[in-house]
Length: 547
Image (cartoon, rainbow, N blue to C red; front, top):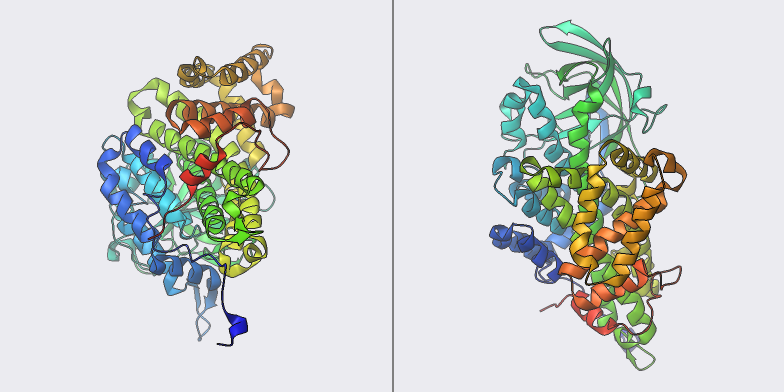
């Protein structure tokens, strides 16, 4: 190599580190939320996620997107999607670790939290494969309302065996489930769906119509909304029928997406597809609601994971690169930016794990059930909205290097907006919060009770809570606050995050959060934290230790 090509002042690759041990906010939340028993298995997944091998899988799966094969060489319709081997390694690892089903296989206290922690760690390797993992996880509670369907499908959906390829359910050791709800004329307004369902006898229905978005179309079955004679209903549509024939579920094309490239998303034609009813006819939204609640949780966890990985990449780079005579991490303005990224990341992680804890305890605790309902929608809006800003700022910390694909930051940047779109965009979740406040006013009391223990210790948090209480008290009907719904949900999200940080977070992180997010002492961009904060301690806490 000529001497002009000597490589100096470049950070080492961020590989060979344990994502769990590098994330004290996650580790403490795992124990606090009742899943300390799972620490060894979660740590093992964190170590694997930081290995060169796994990081290579993530890069390869994104670089080599799936390809659609509609017909075989003889002209027969096959409707198959071909994936790179790295995709199968990522998805197979997720299934073997129970990220798609662990709380249903072993519903002990803390099971949802343990599973969320694993999903958070493994999503940092590559986010796209989390789609079928999340949908399969969320399908089980929906199917349990359908009696016989759950008895037939749940053993395969919760198995720790990953078996790609299309085959009858009886011939597979494990199965995955997706969903297809969106249609081009309705989007989030699923009541506008036109896909029709007609009874065909023997508990079968035939579905005909077009679905505009169907993620992970190589799953073994899908929950689908269609118009039955009694109204909008939910159905289970298998890809392969018991006799081995392909169902009338045709893949028209794969979407050319901004990000999430490793995961296939398709337009689907249902041509008399055989289906079975899930729940009551005409009650499709009720049947699908439990599934959506669980996938929304994963949107929150996935966005928190993305922010953590972005902050890890930025702090690692700044710790090993120098400019103008000293490390980037030691330069005051860069320290401010890195600390702000770390504060946003830690706040998201604590809120995601707290919501997962509410999922664990909701069945036996009415207060936790109320908190789960409200906090899931609040966190889905707020955490997912913060992810793009964090990804963009982290990319900028690497300068031009961050704009190059090899750095991994462009993949995070492209991925960042997606969780805000999935399972209801920002407006949908904000309006959902208003509906919860109107229909279940006790949910606000529960949320404020969650915040209460920290208010006495932190005046800035108390003042922010008083302002929210006054705003809601002045509104006779929360639904009337539609035009300002986003503003209200942002404040509720910041209240929850601030209370968790004050009670359980690092003091320097909590102080910075309250000063900037609650007291309003910040600029319009990240990296504008006020003076007087211990920014160096925040950055040190967030920086991964390699070797």
